[in-house]
Image 1: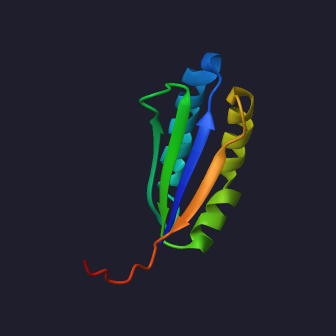
Image 2: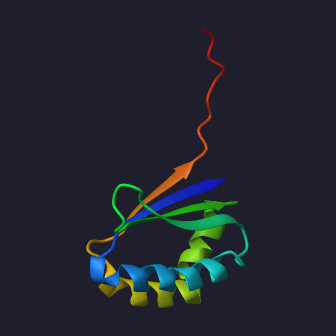
Length: 101
């Protein structure tokens, strides 16, 4: 399983358009093969920080998501609404050995 946390600093004047535009992206992404969850959130501390939390069955599914037509549309729509580039962290499940106290 693959997790993704993508954080974007939105321009204050573009905040509403960014969030509205991402709702369409969310709806399309949730239909994709391998998408287990895909949600957008705003920071409690900074209303202009938008965080997408994703969960995918495999890296291949995530790679296909990046090439999806609606993602191209989203990238074009969101680019002028960002204050800085999106920071994307891809995380896999950690294999933790049993720890004894």
